[in-house]
Amino acid sequence: MSKAKLLVEIIEGMYGDTPRTMTALEVRTIGKEHDIISTHRILNESNIAENGEFHFPPKNTSYKGGNPPKTKNKVSPIKKVKVPKVAAVKSPVPEPVEVTANLSMETNAFTENLIPEKDDLFVSFGNFKNLKKIVKSEMFYPSFITGMSGNGKTYMVEQLCAQLKREVIRVNFTVETDEDDLIGGFRLVNGETKFFKGPVITAMERGAVALFDEIDLGNPAKIMCLQSILEGSGYFIKKTGEFIKPAPGFTIIATANTKGKGSEDGRWIGTNVLNEAFLERYPITFEQEYAPPAIERKILDKLAYSIGVDDRVFLGKLIDWADIIRKTFADGGVDEIISTRRLVHIVQAYAIFGDRMVAIEMCTNRFDDETKIGFRDLYTKLDETVSLDGEDEQRVDAIIEKAS
Image 1 (cartoon, rainbow, N blue to C red):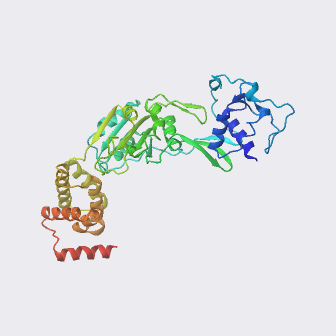
Image 2: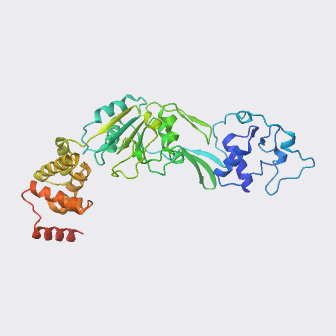
Image 3: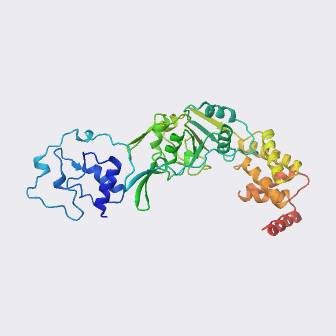
């Protein structure tokens, strides 16, 4: 099949075969989206309409490609035709796309059960109850959650939806995330061009919770396609002519380490200053802090029991250690912090290696030398059973080497 004929079939799949006229720009734009440069199947003198646009379907239906057919009486569109100033608005609104031989709509990318599984280790705290009320209400009420890394923002959303038996579609944002990733786009499948609906459209149709994870990593220009969706008014898919109305229960929850204003200290590298109009469409913002010591103790107790760690003294020392570091961080005394996630990592390492200092050392190696030595030294002051003299350092290295 020639590319010219393929282009005609693609347009038929998008708009149907009802007679209409199209501008040259419309034809070339569709062709460009499908890497088809050959548009002369439609854009030739034998196919021009009175208003300066071009007939569709093409009147020269027997044309198979190559040079345009010759006509005895050529009509110059420049000399003979006056293009009305409002010609662009005369085109009818495209009908929703239908399945054809070469173009169809695919929505089966999300057919599995999207309700998260309940985690018995989950401990609720902070904004959990209020956020759960929003999701339970089934109102469209976009919410923005901001806070330090590793304090359970995303985990909280997934678990409240698990409790409410609500579907969640999680979208992880990067600087490359664009309209095609979010709304959907054409894909070539087994020689056929099909439009696949993206995760946001799918969430709208299913009445699911759309979880925009790390939204501040997105390119502010590329994610502006979400504007009308954030208003709750539905979305018109330009490429198919279909209007998507949100199903009851659909809402949006975004998580971020910043408030969409960028990161001045460089801690959250890659985050962007988001468009103010975009941020304004989130009516509520939750500030997620780390869990207080009593709650973190419950988290670590549950985890320790599940993996066979029986050392409550060690868990208590870890909680005190992390709390001191966080307070020092808040006062500007250190540049790094121990997150809840890192405490979980330390307990897991302890279950594997069976040694307190080995677990702490391995899980603090990600920090610079000055910070990690300071953190380890602080722990030795809280736990009289450990130290970092020369002999213990050799013992720690030996255990790590043996384990590896």
